[in-house]
Length: 430
RNA sequence: GCGGGUAUGGUGUAGGGGUUAACACGCCUGGUUGUGGCCCAGGAGAUCGUGGGUUCAAAUCCCACUACUCGCCCCA
Image 1: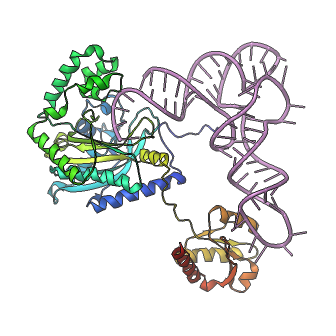
Image 2: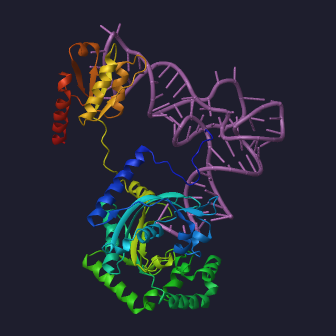
Image 3: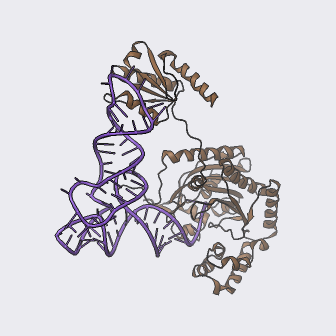
């Protein structure tokens, strides 16, 4: 093995896998546009401060040094984005989108960086498809975001997904809940695993996430956030559920669903899939009404989700769902002998200009026709256009179908139209 | 940061102290003068992860390291 390898936690997306990506991203983008979302692209790098204020310096991503942060010579500190939302809200504020017709509905796609220990379905660079609705408090906005996630999965043919929903409250009611939870857990401290004791001290909500033995029973009797929501949050949650019911969208209320980033308010949700290793969430999202203010803008509500493409691909493979095969060029231009190469090159470009996919056989020295035929076969080519000296002297090309049809000779000048007609005919026949 | 597993041609594997390290797939070239898939015949390609040790002899045994991988934490 050569001592050449990609950096830890990085992935090469080979052509074979890449067409999953094309399909997934295309499907997601089509769907998003149908909902009225517009594509936006923002930089991979932001000032570190943005994430510090957005995610909170107490958040795990920040505290555990999971960010790729670079100190610039001039003293600035910049960071490879560990998530999309903060950057998108920054873009909203900076570009004056607050004065656009509200709400502003955006989607984007690109790489995200977190310096974690890699494992199945978790990489240091991963790609997310992300949508956000900014400037809207209506629970129907939450609904749209959630349904976009669900319908996206349906469009891919995904099966066995569960929709996990919870409300995480707001600054008005969350502290009261945390206090109640703390009290309860402290009373049962003897039953807590060491990890959970640590969490209790550091971030009590995280205990809800615990996978330790016996926690299911213990937490079943723990205070539930639902009973502590303020009027506003409760109404919002109830309205959202009514809307989900109206669309007959099933979901599981998961009072243990908490998310790692501090800015979430009210709605939080995840979409879980099976068979992709220990990482089961392919979507995660929620509402973040306080984020814009936290990063220094005027108060702007928002709701959105991020979807991990690598995990979606893992899940699709697990379920044996394959994307439609990408089209390969239907013809290969083969040539041998004399001045045929020049004619072949000209023909190939002429076909491409006419909109016909053409692969040109390369041959530095003499190369047998057999070898060129083999090449065509390997690439699933439908027609080999053979330019030999005999054909060329008559201004013709031999057309050899690889699917069993008869070989014919067609005048070079007529080839583009002839091929177009053939391809159209074949397509019509399926 | 903490655990477990693995490390042999491009890929997937077999082997197991002793002269040319095996197999499959892939790749290349041929199988009569210019024609694919199947088949057949050849060929290229590996300092058996790295460094040390034991031994007359190490890919094989021992130790360390590194990398990859899976899991914990956390998250998409």
